[in-house]
Amino acid sequence: MTCFWVRARLECGLARPRRPGERVIVIVDAHVHLYPPEVNRDPAGWAVAHGEKHWAALCTRQRKDGKPVQAFPSVEQLLRDMDASGVTKAVLLSWYWENHATCVAQNRFYADCIRAHPDRLVAFGTVQPKAGPIAFEEAVRAMDDGLAGFGELSPHSQHFAIDDPVWRQILRLAAEWKVPVNLHVTDPAGRKYPGRVETPLEDFVRVAKEFPATTFILAHWGGGLAWSVEAAALPNVWFDTAASPLLYGPEVWSKAKSARILFGSDYPLILYPQTEAAPAMTGLLKEAQQAGASAALLGGNAMKLFGW
Image 1 (cartoon, helix red, strand yellow):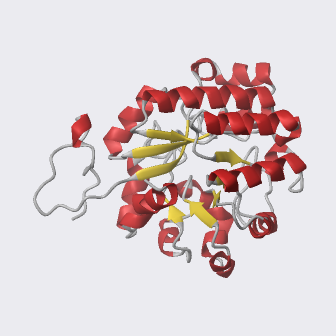
Image 2 (cartoon, rainbow, N blue to C red; image 1 turned 180 degrees about the vertical axis):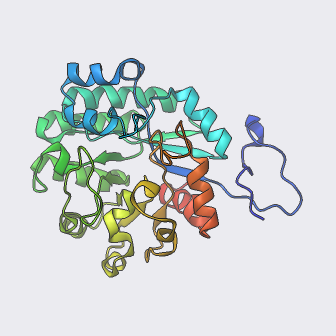
């Protein structure tokens, strides 16, 4: 029986000894969000003060039962939750912020996180192409600070055009640096929720074909592209499983036709609001395991993609 607790990091004291005959599985959560302490202290108030209305609509609201949709943990709490779930590494994704200044603050915070925990965390930078040339300059600085990609970004939520010249310049930079770009995708057939923005799937297909040297990760199973016949024709596109239980049933794990799938939780989103009061990765890992998810999906694909 496969055990999620097996770790390849005994020297750090974070794993128990391997049992004879036990299979080693490296688990990577490729879709995690964290925010600076000033955001965590008063998320709604911070969003008003910084003009991030769309983020507030998605992340600071409550469900119909009065429970929050997510928590706002510190980096230390994230590490504890990773240990509790047997997650070896987490990929910190930024957010599709509306304002350039917010992007800069997020990138600096993530640079601090990966410097403090280089063995556990990698991070993606964020940009707002509408800011113009300074957005490209920020993208370069994020790479110089050691960030490992861009995203989670959303042209449709950030209100910049697919043909925006700065955006296209950043996509060429990602190809040059050989780092991936994670994009937020909603399923056109999915349920409605506060803050939902439509993201036409043809836009992602188009940009992937126009930038074949750029590696894309389409979040949330690519809004259904992961099990489309078109996925096979997009060799530079990967998909993650972020927020899966809130979007699809367990059958989705065997539905995807693409082999380029990355395990991602969307932590600190609360994925099982009926049974969980706090964010965790354990429930989604259990769901994936029971559905027969491969070792490649749980971590091997991420190891390959990032060259670890």
